[in-house]
Image (tube, rainbow, N blue to C red; front, top):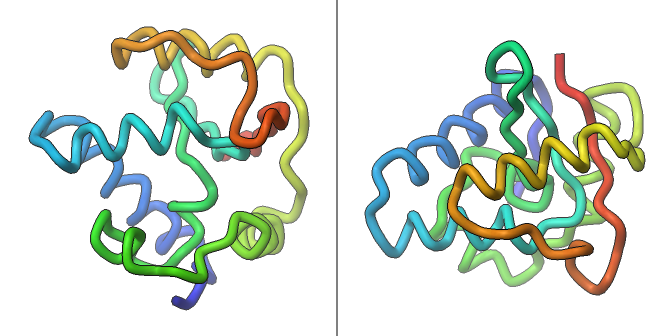
Length: 130
């Protein structure tokens, strides 16, 4: 699958995740929750004064992604999507204690307690999308 090349394509994938969460209809709802729970690198987007939403790079980095496309993409790789998002946003994801706390708060809003670390025991990293 092709990776995102501009912010509009990235935003389209954020909207897809938001819609899966808003509808609360399985299997899409649980799938979106799992992406957020198990992710390692996230694009953080401020949603209002002090709240953020977090979008996993491995899903968000592929063009016009959906649950079915993502499940059937047997070559999906976070290193590929991280590289695409890094090029698009002009920086690499970084450890950010403030965003880590906001991520944990977001997980609680979604109804689960965040794991101590992301997939494979890696510390979560973030892009702050503006």
